[in-house]
Image 1 (cartoon, helix red, strand yellow):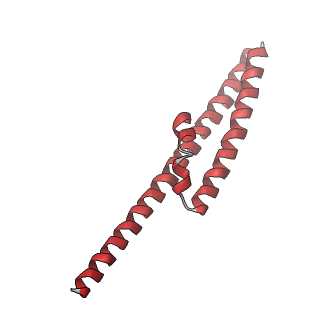
Image 2 (cartoon, one colour):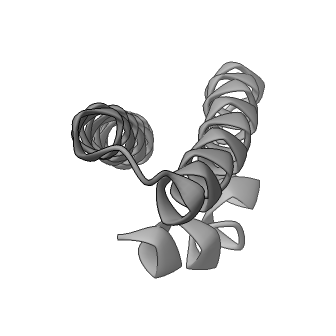
Length: 104
């Protein structure tokens, strides 16, 4: 999932400013969450107490689930923007076809 989000940066140039802003905010959140995951993983490696290790593992899993959710949000935003663009293009084509019919 991570690679698809990162490779989507080229596609994002076609998105509206609002969608780009949303995606940028989400990506910043993901970056922060990944840093937290890395810190927790480091703590997990150093933690001798099994109960604390279990708690850290759960926290890591929860953060990873949150990251996956945010990545899906990005995908949904991109898909919604593509649908809007397709609808605009279709409306433009319909309008042109209507104008041609009127002109004949």
